[in-house]
Image (cartoon, rainbow, N blue to C red; front, side, top):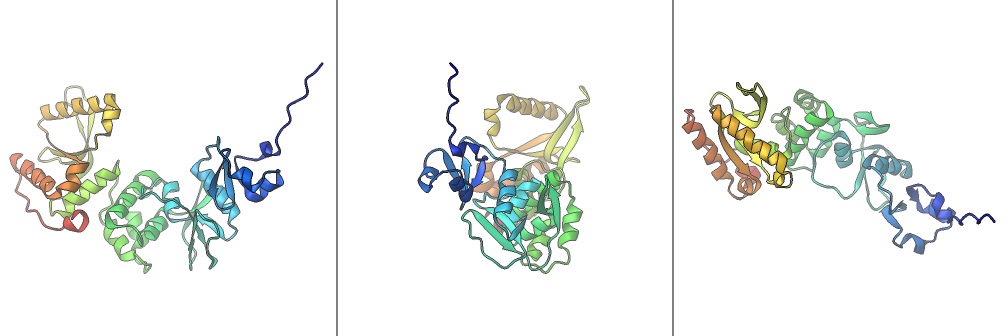
Length: 309
């Protein structure tokens, strides 16, 4: 005798992300939604607890859920573009309609004029330049530099593009955007490289080159340096201790430095605690190393206090 098929709960037909209206139509109650099987994504929208929707999928669903929102903006746009910003708990969407978000977990930004948009994975998103300009009104100088450097690296835009995009803007934060854009560089691989470079420049020292590539004359292998003064063979590198968890990478870094030291390079290794606890001492170590390498003693200004004081 054939066993009867197991009964399916109506909620089994729900997608990974669904609205409360869809849940009620499937036979769930408000009490059901408060139990362990579901997680609220934002007001009126839930996720099956075993599901792991991507950030892009969450944004796409949010755009379908909020009729007045037609594109992704600000923090969410930065993340979509590969930019780095401080964490944000809300999804950020843009609208041309003067309205407030009725959904906890979704922030709406009203645009008086049409913003510059691109389409990423089928989702309309403010462009790299628009996102950089929009974030300039809320981010601190250092965080905006991190964003600019990361957008250049991850979105394919250039420092010149960002400069030109904000050049004639009168938007709130545009002056800061223009100031920071002068310091945005290509090939910056991490936020802490951006922060360390800002410390050096704001402290009055000469701007180091970013991610200089040198070739080992013995092995002909290419070696990359975070920041350096190539003429003096002085390298400045950030060590965040994260490599302790990746021992192979950490060992490779040690061996790389040994090879470069054999080639005549001198290193200043900077940790996160040193950069924030005693930034002037970091600047002093750098200029001392430059002098040892035969360069001039660079005077240290107090400009670093604006960002690290």
